[in-house]
Length: 481
Image (tube, rainbow, N blue to C red; front, side, top):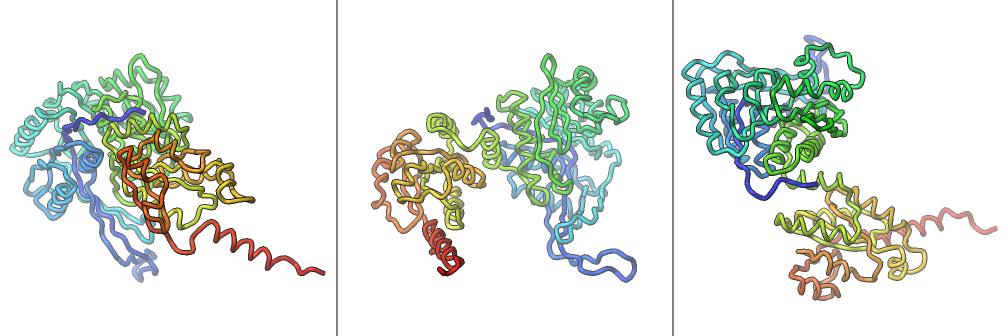
């Protein structure tokens, strides 16, 4: 899959910002006043929400971002500005006295979302504030490669603001109501399914939502005036429509609804950045889906980094590779300036020592390659009865580890042929070696790489585990009669 290019994208996000607060604790009793749980507050986690979350994700994915919006003269506004600056977002947030910063608080008791309460104003902006906001928007978009409008009905995206965005080079709109944006002729709009049903004026009685939308692709493009319409289908993924092409489907791994907070913002950020970087709309949709898949596995309002996304995209392509294809893939990673880490071993019975060591290795670069001895190679190295698990099984288990990007098989006693093909930036081994004890070290250094030995957990080895299993088996056998 193609990715956004190396050029830093200058993005401007305009829209409704908010502060997300997660109040975490436990509930072990009911209140005397009513049969409701009493929650003991243990921690509060604040994060940018709405347009601010989209901006934060864009920065994490590698863009330079300027955020234009409105906050109130209140503590949530101060907290939001501070958190955005810490995340690297250039803030251009207009403070409007007397207006409340949108603030969404969620109560989570022992991991269970129990309640949410919101404070926000949807009043029309005072004329003076709107004029100031317009000036800030116009100044920001002059330097933008892409503009993202996040219109959630919070009062920022007024008709005048929308008109000021008409004609910008690349405009992506994430709005609860996309029809008002038609006059801007956006490059892409990203409504959810319920918003599309309202736009079409239909009643939601569709059993097969993708089929329902596919039959109405042309109508959606006409009603929105957009070059691309991406309809999010919650746990069912997304459907992308563009003129002259069949609808394109992406698929999601379902997650509990309370884990999906902010996932749409993350999707918008990744989709926009990939599109701005030269990817096709279909590739951008896959990037958006993969990024959303990252954050729905994390608590709270989460952010997907570029490293997270590239790893998620690689996993969609498959971790187990042939040496020849792997060498081509790694050339692309090196072109993007990513550090390639290589290690090898039998990994016959995967244990805690292996997992800890691979976690350490994965933190040393952007791409971790694990080379696995073939069955014949293990038998030569370890003797009769080994391996316990076939190479196919060993590679499948390794590929499932979060820190492993690629897995490849080799049949020789040492991985020198693979090292010559892959040319890693860093070659690591675990155990009580020194770099000088590794026969591969001179080759790695000759190829321009570094050699490093990582620590290991004592008494954590495949041989020790097999020995304990054999001993236990002997103890359980009935005595000879």
